[in-house]
Image (cartoon, rainbow, N blue to C red; front, side, top):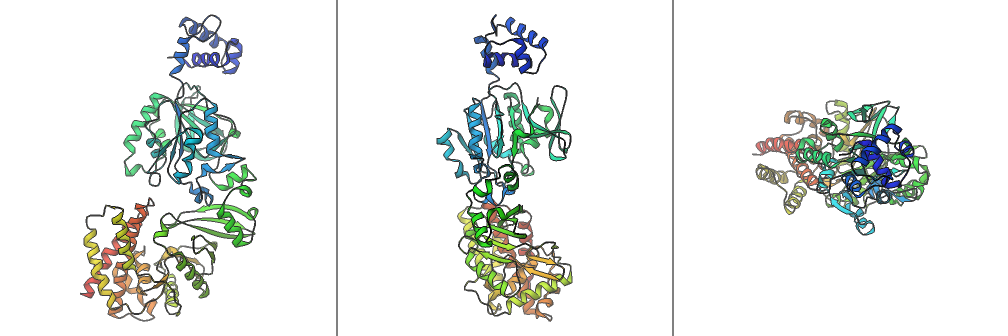
Length: 587
């Protein structure tokens, strides 16, 4: 085992040939006395000869410090880089004339690191060509949509030894990689400003003593990390414990290191601030590469420009909006106005009729129900809408909100407007059940009992549903934009001809928090009178059927790698509770 100074001296001699001890002291930032002592120790061990040349024994001593490989993490979706990440992975964008991940691979190879592993997930096929072009190994992380980047490190576990772990979407102005590294180290930039990233504290020898989220006037973790063989083994043993735990899904590999820091021997590798460039948002990249927006190959930007009659330079302040359950959206400004670009989510082509949605949006605009709509492509499903500032959340306990919302849906139902398409929640639910069966989805224990109840309920409701009307079919709180006395009904993806009660069923089933009695109490706002017993049971049945539809829809989304969280349970409870209440009234 070499001391750090012995390692630095031996490596300098190997890489630079015979040089003076003073030259080495200056190059490794060490005192001349410590370098002289290292020289003497290396000679006594037979690692260098009398003229300072590295012996074969010296080369063997350095071998254990040689970097074996680099693992590039490239599986993430990069939602903060919307809308461009909707088209390709962030690592595949060209920055200052070079594709990000290709530049990274070339830097690794220039440093003598030829064994490179790229862990992919989102749009994985975009990376396959790297195998032939650069001789990298591709590892597929099948859990990228459900778990954070610790799962990518775990996916590459068979490769990790003396290993660099690198993000695929960073740009290094200088080549930060070295063919030999003494011990585990984390690249970090000194930051005087407040940051929410991990900040590191260390002793005088830069040995990391703590890692905490947030701080200022400290080293901010950024750039490649290197793990020695022993620390790689420790990291993998910790990852093995977390890899299958549902409670660990959101963890970064950094989080695991921070929590178990005392089990590692880690030092800070200080990096100049201008040597590392990280692009979390599109605006970060355009600030670094002024020509990026103008030159990037993007059909999305072309669509925006042609729809709004603007240039790419007019598009500013681009920021992702929290992803919805079905789609991905981004907020931007152009010529002083704010807009939302909506991108269809993965798998939605199986369950959303975009031509029907476009027809519904045009109808809603005509009826004054949604004046935000600007344009939708009926084939591809992308949409542009006006953004409304300062909206408040719809409140199911606010009588004014509920009364206005139910009056709006009554306007749609009684408008006489028609759609060439129809949507039956019961039939569509059964179609999704068939899709899930084809995917061998593991249905819950009580699923068949619930399906049987919904089947009986659907048969009962067929008898008294009346003529179909134009329905929204996703009529619930989050789809209302409430600003002062104004209210708009948005998101018309499922709109078509159907049973009027299913809009009321959506209103209740999707997060209203209403009991059966409370749901019955608000129906008079829709009818303008107290409903009959037949109308009431029909509406309760619609809550059950609609709840079941969204329940199996949520299962399908999970099967497609897009879990919807607590909504699955909300819809399950609506199907079970309201379905049972309606059946009792029918029977």
